[in-house]
Image (cartoon, rainbow, N blue to C red; front, side, top):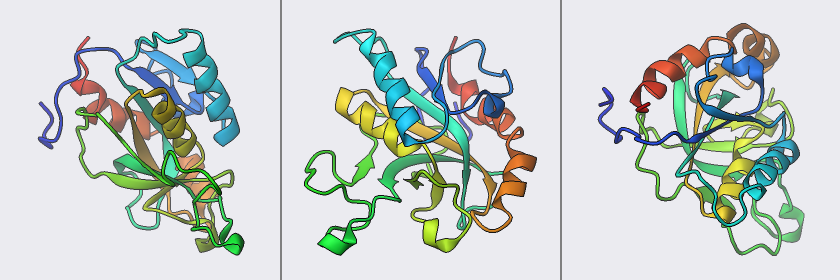
Amino acid sequence: MSQYGKAKELNTKPLMVCALKIETQGQLDDYDVLYTGVGKVNATYALTSHFGKYGSHIPYDLVINYGTAGSRKIKKKTLVDCTKFIQRDMDVTGLGFMKGETPFEQDPPFVIQQQNVEFNPIGRNATCGTGDNFAEDKSQYYGEVVDMEAYALAKVCYLYDVPFISFKYITDGADEQAHEDWEANLADGIEVFKEKVLSEIKD
């Protein structure tokens, strides 16, 4: 069991979803992996198309998203789990909606929370703000962690009723140094992910 005491061992192989192969460094070759490309549109299209191949019998008990992210609240080179997701660049406050809220959409709620996930070796339960920009200042920041795909993946899984969890390796502080820090640290996270998450998955 995990040193964190927060999760059950996973007995089945889930679908791993990542944006870029450079983030995984070839370390997920033993798993069923879907690479989506960067951004919400690419993530939505890739995962929806993948699910669509199976019709009403999607063969996954869990989707695990792994990727890199920025944070102003969590120190760099830390792996965190994200279990709450918001669309940080959805802003229709001018019409009276809350930031992150999609106008005239009742379901899912504007903050998507993971459902029916017993597997979580870390247990921090961070909020991830997803947007189609690389966050480098406070105006682009929303949530404890910022990325560019997780909300879209969480929404697809919510609509397909497939459990979803996201693990993010914090590469940068979502600030003016973010691009340099991301490039310097992005390759390190997969080793931490293997140690703290993949070690809890039975073959």
